[in-house]
Image (cartoon, rainbow over all chains, first blue to last red; front, side, top):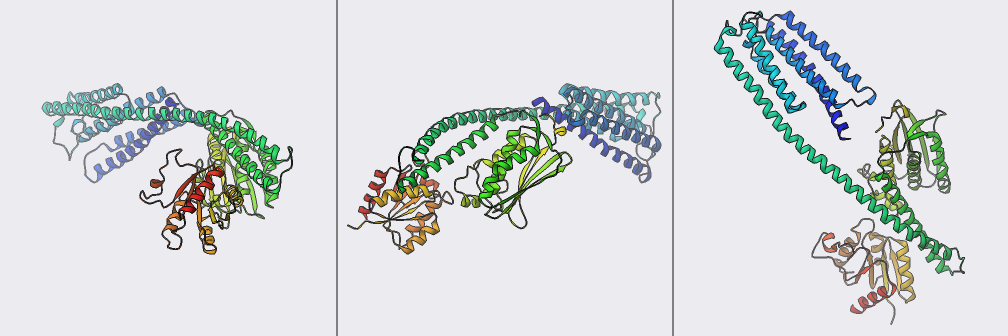
Length: 448
Length: 131
């Protein structure tokens, strides 16, 4: 998981470099034009525009290569991305050197732009690789300066900017190169030191996160054990009370029947609360889903059958608006069905008698959108996200039903998110609210 | 001696019913209310000799709020309040600070849930005798 994260981040870095290069290309093209036309510096325009073109082309190829590496959510090995980043930076150094050669060599103060490459290398590469890049930069730049000095390469004068013949002045050249080399080395030293500290901090945070997760798991296992024990006691209580309440062991007078009935119903509520707690804790603890092909249509009709009775009792119309299309997804059927029944039961519970509930499924290119729309009491403003938290219950929900578990929606959220989907709620403009969740299509799921 | 009137303020109908049965057997007149508003309404209709008050109702602070409201009101400040709670002493919640006022939680007695009939009756009798 960790290496996966790092490789994702490297891909982002590679994309960032490509973006930076687009900016550099624009600045280079416009800069050359401006220097030549407005400042009247004698520049070999065509050559510079040609380099700009090469850079443009090369950036396109890189972008394509990155797309190829990450095609359909693939995770390329970190090593090959690192190598690509190293290659990019070296190529950039080479191109900057060429540009400098065509624009005055040592006489061009833009030679200090190598600093930016050093900073980028220090952030993206290891310490050793950053110093290697510094050495490459110093070598390339010194090489063209030397070749121009000895007359092997043509020197392009920056007429209108630099004094004549500076590139032949040994003191000037050696002084500038000395400062140049030290600047690059010091920049790499400083940046890598800072980056190292940041990485250490980040590792610390990662470690702490891992520990928290472990602690959370221990807590969940504890909750699981305790609730399981409590459930045993509650089940025994329920069985005994049921015998008395159903008068199998003798008749009860009215008051007795009423009181034992209250106890019986509270026991059932407690058991359903414990069952919900067990379910959500198990879901919390489960790492990977055991996915199989699920026919969403079948799950939906099964969920509707489960809740239909309750809807009839409250005289609520419950309609499914879907097409004949088969909606296939990869997932755990039990979790999806539980999510649906939770949402439907909620809709029924918080919709007054005579109301309407409509379930729809929409095909949204890469995912299915399932919506449950009711004519119920709605969600108080500001509670739209909180209601998905464990044990949270909206104030108006508490008034309708005192003893909700506060776990149904948080179960739904976790189940949907484990499938790579999202869940949210909105109030309808007229009345009631709509709960929506998405499930990625079966051919669109990257195994997580 | 004529038995006193008790007002039970609790939003749990089952607990209310259980206490009602216990108290009525001993001859108390019992009124019940499920919220602050209902409690005030009931008090205006019939005065009460003692109030049994649950802490958590619509909001977790409702019990505190009502107790303060009553003790600040000249009409009701002499009615003893027996506060019902299922948490006191067990998980170490400090009621006075939880009420947001460390110096003033104006209740006369506490009673822990689940309710034991003999304890409930004893506390109520002693509170009434004190008046």
